[in-house]
Structures are given as structure tokens and as C-alpha cells.
Length: 260
Image 1 (cartoon, helix red, strand yellow):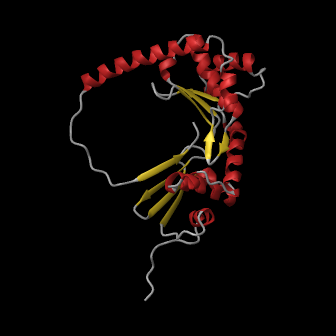
Image 2: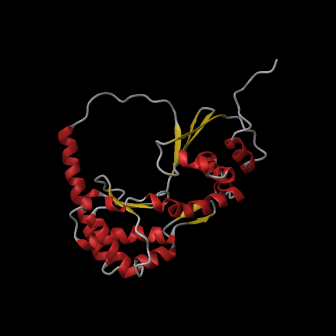
Image 3: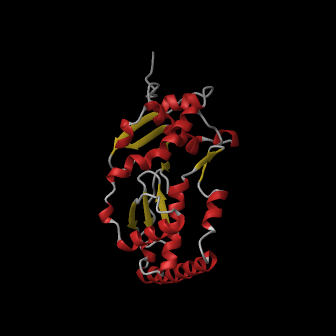
């Protein structure tokens, strides 16, 4: 009697897995979903027992399947790789995927709503563009994020946007400019992929970042603002308090793919 195990051998996930590890048995039940909930060109992978789920932003549906396989392989390595050799594994599809990611900002340019950018951020972008990039860098989406003390600012390769923590809305100009310059360097230099790892803070990145005038002094100003915010945040937490017991959740391993 033949039993249906639920394992799918015709999915993109299976193709990606079998090309990565041709000698290993594929024993996962796969679910794949394209949706609008994830950000532009984002994706994530989750593993619950033998159920392997991959969700993609809807824009991936229009991308060539060989590039999608590279995306899935990238996620599979981050999820399942155990050995150093596996973690550094690279394939033709992963190289296609990495090259595609570097071009995403070009595809996204027409979608930018430049008028929605905050004036403070735009002015900072213009100053840094003039001083360090000869006014050659195209403006990307600029926006304020939550009041964060861990992720001070970020560049999203997927949708060509720079987000700055709202902690710095009233910061001195030199502080905002250093944060902006850092993220503009990410936009300019993109990323390198070596031994299966994406590298953004390369020696060239650090060399150019150090060209910023009085960088060490400005970094101390930023550290002071963070300390002050953490102190205030701790007081808020004490005043708010916590209640209720911890909710038990099923074992779930989940990895997201996005560039910040």
C-alpha cells in the first residue's frame, strides 16, 4: 500500500534543496505563499517539525524561477546548514540571486514618493551627496522610523530606502549627517558575498566612513543620546510594570530575508 507522505518533489523549494545537497534526502512537507504583507522583494522561511514554509512578497512572482531558487537556497543555508562548509556553500543560483539583489534599487526607483520625504532628512541627504558623492547619488525614499536605540538607521537594499530612528529628530546637524552618510555608503557600495556571507562593512566602507570630519567626537554625541534614552526608557518600563504569565508558543524556527 502506497502512503502519501505530503512531501512535494516538484516545488521550487525541493529543486533548490536538491541542487544544494544532492546526496541528502528531502523529507519536508512544503508550503509556499506569495503575498503583499511582506515588504518589497522580502521573503521568509519557517520550520515547524517537518513542515517547511516559504513566504514571498508578491513581486517575486514575476522574477525568473532560477533567481527564486537562489533566494530559497540562501534561506535554506541560513535555516538548515550545520557545518562550516555548508554555511559557506555557494551555487550558480545564489550568485544569480545576489546579482539580482544589487539591481533591486534600480527597479524600485519609479515607485519612490520623494515628496513624502521629511525635509530634515532630505536636507541631510543633499549635504552628504554634495560633500562626498559629487551630487551623483540619486535620492531614495527617506523616512523616520520608531524611536530605536539599537538600529539607529538603516538602508534597505530591497526598496532603496533610508530609515533613521526618530530619536534623532532633534539631533544636531552633525549627528544626523553622520547617520545619513553611513547609510548612503551602503547604498553606494551595496554588499559583497564571500564564503556564503553577505558583507556590508568592508574595509573600503570603513575607509570612506572615516573621511567624515570629527567622526569620533560625533559618535560620542550619539552614544550620549542613546544612554539618555535608555535611562528614560528604563524609568518608563518601571512605571508601566508587567502582568500576566508567559504564553506558551509552539517550537518554530523562522528566518527572514531582507537587507537593512
